[in-house]
Every structure is written in C-alpha cells, then in structure tokens.
Image (cartoon, rainbow, N blue to C red; front, side, top):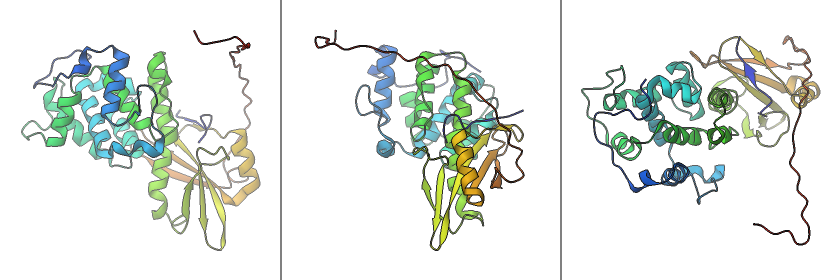
Amino acid sequence: MSPEGTAQGTASGEGTQWKGAATQNETTLMPRGERLHAHSRQLGWWVDEATPRHESEMGTQSKRDKLILAGLFLAKFDRKGLAALGFATFAEAYNTIACGLKASPASVKNYRDELDPLFPNPRRGWANRELRPHCQRAFDQYGHLSLDELGHLVRTGLAASSDVEEIGDEVGGPDWPAGFAKRLQTGLAAETYFSSQAKSLPDFREYELTDTTRLGCGFDFRLTRTGAPFLAVEVKGMRQNTGTILLTDKEYRTADILRERYVLFVVRGFAETPEHIVFRDPVHGSLPLAPRTVTRQETNWVATLGATTTPA
C-alpha cells in the first residue's frame, strides 16, 4: 500500500518508580542516541551503529519478544504510552499491534497484565502470579528505559517489516504519534490481517499470495492459481467502522483496467474489533468513488559538486 493509500475514520509518566528492581547496564550512561542504537543492537534490530537491517534479516527478534516489549511499554507508561504510540484506547492498541504481528489481541493484553504489578499503574494485573522467565528477562533488560527509548524500540519492532517510517521519532513533530498508529493500521496491520485470513476466505482460499506492496504496481497482493487469471488485491485499513478510503490515481487506473480481477479489501474497526468488507471491481461497482485533486508543494535540496569538492 502506498503512503497515499490511507483511510480515515468519521498513567504514569517517564521517570516513575516501580515495584521491583531493574538491571542498570552500561548503556544507561550513554547519550540518548547511542543508547537507542545500543538497545536496538541487543534486540537484533541493527547491523551496526547506523544501518537498520533489511526486512529479510529481521529474524533474530521473535514475535513473542515484540509482544512482550509492547506489553512492557503499556504496563509501565499506561495511557501516556497509548498516546505515545498514537492509540486512543487499549483495545485499539491490542488489535493493531496483534494484527501487525499475526498474533491474538489477547496476547498483548496478557503480557501487559503480567507486567502490571511491577509498575504503579491503576491496574492490579496478575498480582498473585509469578513472573515467567521471558517476561522477567524483558523487565530486567528494558524496564528502566524512558518513554522515548522504550517507545522507540516498540515502534522499531512494528515498523521493521513494513513501510512505516520512524523519522518522526527523531524529529519529534507534534503529529507523529497519531501518524504512526494510522500508518500502522492502514499499512502493516491491515495487510497482515488479509494475508493471515485469505486462506480461510472462500474467494481466496485456492490462490497463492505474492506480496507486491513494495513494487508500486497499484495493488498490495497478487493472487494466482492454476488455470485462472490472477487477482489483484488492494488492502485498506480504517480505525473506525465508518470513514473515508482513498485510492491513489495508480490504484484507480489499475482497478479500471482489471475490473472484476481487482479486489478492494477493507479492514475496519481497529478501535474495537477488526472486521473486513470486500469490493470486487470497485471502480465500476457499488462503491461511490469521487475524484479529489490534491496539489502538493515539495522542496528539494540541491548541491553542486566541483572537481575539488571534498567532505569536511
């Protein structure tokens, strides 16, 4: 899904003390930028000081580890953590994070509940249950991190297999938290929902899926089966059950050409319970699409290199 293919719908804070002790390793004394790289390397998310791993090299961090980090972040920072990720409710966070990682929303909630007793939030959590070893390790290693540092690791883990950019994390603009959640819902979470559900849906169960999200071809998945023309599936996501979906000009033109072979798959309701609705031939069918012209102003930065130009 291109960044333009979006859909719109119509605690305790940093520095809080918690019950229990966290291991303070040597990275605590580093400047913030170096700490973020160091913790990311410990999680297997960086090859060196500045270069993130390609998607195909992200296998060192397991899905369970990412779920635990999300639960740890929500347990420690509570509603301030929700806001930092751009979510309005815990249900929305559970649904979106779980869809993005092909997990159950209950998994995210359970990890938060297990870690709740370690922090002074309003919930009691699993107070009478001994912390499992993998959750204890996560708490010992990352429980002392600040809102920014732990939030960076959570967002990096979720963004690792998608086109959700983390540049706003460094720039710190006022709109980046909500923007991250929205891009996650309209991109990775919705696409993962489709890829995990397709084999159980009658219209798609006999097809093989190929992810084309990075190819810029006007759809997100190419579905093929022997003896039949391919289907093109474009996936959109919506926070609420009602709202606006947007097709880019390329997506529209591709749908116009492919007609019945073009499928618009809309995942809606991340704020409560995700569900989907399917439109075959969206351009010529019942979907009331209307053109909207957008004028963009873009600034490019140009430098002229002479024969004697050298780095400073």
